[in-house]
Image (cartoon, rainbow, N blue to C red; front, side):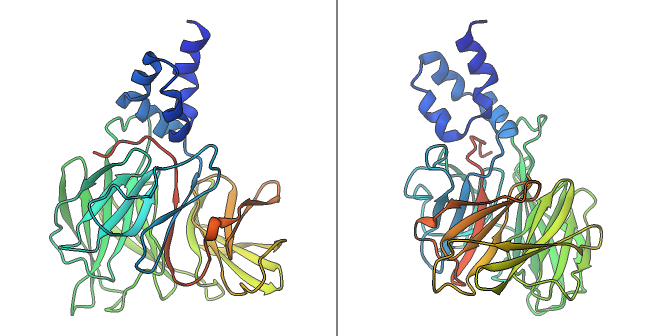
Length: 344
């Protein structure tokens, strides 16, 4: 095997979709290999670096905040290939979940790097504005077909119950679970985007509870966040544990990050941070961003994205935001991995 073949087979799967697209011009052989479903599967499994964030303000179109324009990227305008205006709902390992604003408000699953997309069939339940969603996709080595699930927690109109409806790409259909949650009442509302981890979908509710739904066993559970937990946090995975991470501003450029984890999501760690270079006049506009594994936390303060290493305690500015403002009118901001994952 010559060096070019060695690179083709052993290096390319670890590169981003943007870099791989550039490398198609190396040779006809590389072009063919990069476009194969098998390379897409390998790259989806091996490349899982957070590449940026999709965000949306009010009724505007979703935009992309790129953490490294030289390494990552999506065709512009972002999501312009979809058939009409959409609302950003969630993401998972390179796949984006959106919902059309017109008609019956169908869901779309798409890969913004390849412009592949699929419209899902109409669900059985009415998914109103208080419905909560989690896109569940695991890029493990045996998931060659790239199957995913969309888990929806659906409050029934006029009834104090939440039902669960799941779309499976493997069957191409929706399934209404027998699980019915009656503990949350009629005013169920998810306080942020859902999170998927190890076969379970999670949502933080407006009452500072975590609603969990086990896809395999079709059962739900509720975890009460401690009273000292700060609102506006996100669910994330650090190591092998589910965490609730929040941030508060104590004075000027000084912030405190609180990390809840363990089976009861108790407060286990507090981190004092001084973030230099915070733009003037943005007091109160800060948040922790949902991240994709690793030991780095992402923090948005105004238009600046900082990273904080849990192991080395290093603070870095990773993006000046390109006009992003961390204000309450950003309804959604979700992490993105620059992947070649196919939409099935």
